[in-house]
Image (tube, rainbow, N blue to C red; front, top):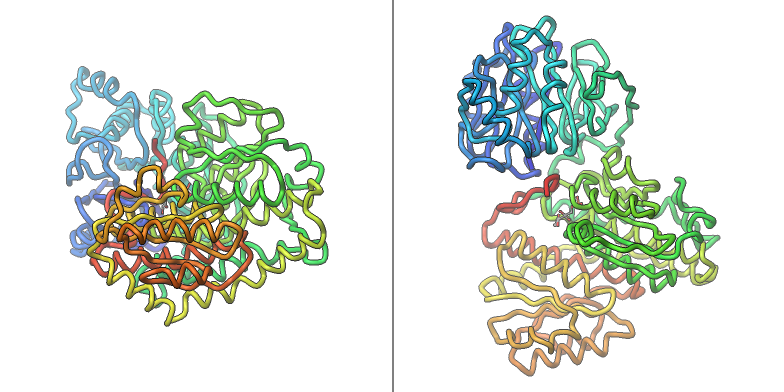
Length: 615
Ligand code: F6R
């Protein structure tokens, strides 16, 4: 989705700062980019369809190098195709104001008709341009930029994060606002900044203010950001410290973020879990409110909502929580839950799982659950995100910034967090004994070297050979059962997202009810099977595939499946409850290497956005 940055700097060079910020937001997905800067009170705009490099090329003439204030944008087209004209920033007819926008103005057609009737001529197909004209019109009536933005937003239906600059205003100022998509502001030693993601702020300062829906902020050099509501009332928003290291936002020596993030997973396990484990008590301590025995005993049912990869973590959470804590769990696509008029049992805890904490459907589903009387909780990776601020209790995953669009380390962190939650729930509800609790937390501690072994040179080259051999196949079916069924779903999702091949995940036992018709030698069947009570059942499913000439790739610790397969990755043994964390690694690597062999843009797959802040 679109990305927004803005800065006013003491020492000039704002164009480079804006570009650096936009580079860090590239992961969000975009098709054009632009900047507007203020130079001697005049607005200067450069914008280009296509990759950021095209904009960089235009800016390399140095004509804007002295500017000290500006805003920038990466656009993910919603209204009008990706073109230079539709790229942001947009201005009003007189060029008084320049504005960038992430989101959708739902009543744009109505507002456009009104403005056109008043003689305004539009220069683009975008909904955003409506906002620029509205703000410009308010300024023409004598309002300052902040009041003009507030008055204009009061007329808008929809969701937005915006930033605007105005020509010739006394004292250089940027005004920004949010209602829906995320926006954070910060004052550092050398300037004031805003961005859609803290990643673009931490190079300047780690102390940031996350704006709330309905906030409008004014940024001016040498002042703390002034935050008001749309009606002009002043509000105080806390400054929060973001512990992410700016270096984590780089690729290091890896060719792609996705590969770097896959390799970070053993550390992510340690960061998310180890400090929270209480070995002596066979328990987990989250160190935040919401997870005491008393609070958890009051829960009779859990409703999980999430999207995409996070939903797959939700399915695994269901196996873990029902299995270890004996609490009934429902799992739903957030986008389905929010529109199906759901019925929630008494004493339901609604748990949203999300990397970004900004996914529109997930947020809407959790809000709905709250209005239906549920208590709310979140598993989330981003401090200060909307989800973290709205949920009544949060388990933060410590995956660090995830930049590759295909989620990998955030998924592992979500599964680890779900495991911790299951143990805590089991202990709180008295269904998990001290001894069993101790065994489980000790097993989690032993997982790190096993994950590392799957990322060693030999293991990785085995996976690359599998990707090479199978890259011409017609299709891919991923099969798994029990707690590894969601891993089959996740393996298939990863492969289709970045390798653009058809892949489907299926419960292995369900194959004979339809998908078995697909099986032929040109179809690769990846069977996820780890030692455990269902291993034998999966083996017989595997045999059914072989009997029909399917090409079988076995992944897991079940040695008999490995012996029955055409190709395989042997995964170290571990408790069945933890096996998804190991089994997903070769599947992530198969997807990565296949995409790499095909020469695709792994970190920015076509049509995908990292954080889906619109419906
Ligand atoms: C897949 C992927 C998406 C996200 C989904 C939810 O690799 O990244 O399916 O998992 O859009 O995003 P979050 O977790 O930010 O709510």
